[in-house]
Image (cartoon, rainbow, N blue to C red; front, side, top):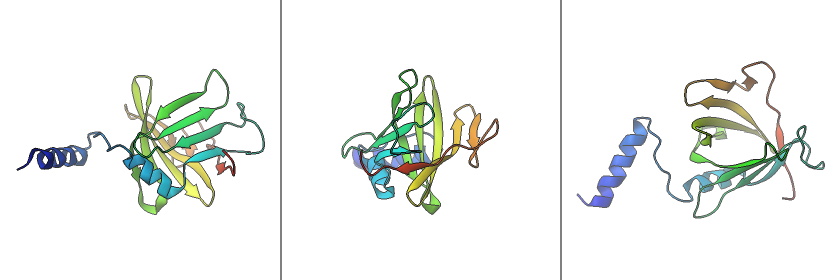
Amino acid sequence: MRLSAFITISLLSLAACGSQSPQAPGAGSVILEKLGLPGRWAQDCFRPYNTHNPHLIYNAPTNGVPTEQVLMDPNFDRTTELLDVKELPGGSVQWSQKAGETIVTVVTIFEGNRQKTWSSTVDDGTQLISNGKFSGGGEPPWFSKCETN
């Protein structure tokens, strides 16, 4: 058996066991492009970003790892890599993001030209968002795709 075939089978076996395997460069970007995620999203695209109107910017490089940039306040702005991106049944998408020393798995749903977080689970099992509801009550907002980036 050739080494490359062995490595491919090993990676597929690890993924089947629930381990997070590295995704080929650009593979996550292909999924995001298919779903129309790259670009700027906001609750109100015509207002600047702030703590009440955060903007999300998704980048899907051809040969790299996709990213999510959150713009809302200089103290909270961040850019994170979207790891292990998967398209789920029904056209939703799942990815993992590093948040300090933890990994957060996020599922995002789409409705027309809008998207919102449906679930967000920390690697210790803590659910921040489940079935479109925050653990403390309330719902995450819908974000609309902005025409200009």
